[in-house]
Length: 153
Image (cartoon, rainbow, N blue to C red):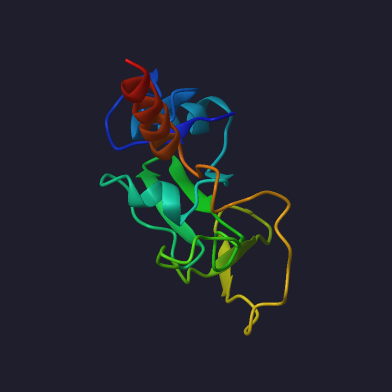
C-alpha cells in the first residue's frame, strides 16, 4: 500500500519511506495496458511528503498529474486542505487546497478536478496526541533516535 510513483523507470524498494515500492511511468503504463484502464487515481501523498521530493509536482491544488503515458495517466488526489491540521507553532503551513475527482461517462478516464480550501477561521479542535512532542516524519524520528543513541554512547 505504501507505494509511490517516481519518474525513474522500473520498480524498486521505497527507500524514502522505508516501506513499500516506487514505480516509474513504465510500470504505470504496463499496469494500465494489462488492465485495459486509462486512469489511476491514488491518494495519501500530501504536500509534506512532496516537499521532500524533486521528481514530481506538488499537490498544493489538491492533486497532481504524476505519470502521463501513451496508455493513460496516474494522478495523486489529496483531499485534506491546509494539511496537516495540527502543527508546531514554528512550522510553516502549506495552505494547500484539497481536491476531489469527478468522473463521468461514457469513458470515465478524464476527471474534472474540483479544488477547495479549508474553512477559515479553522474550527477549534483538540489533538489526540502531543503533536509538539512527537515526531511527524520518518526524518524527525531518525534524528531523534540518532540523538538519543549519540548521547548514550
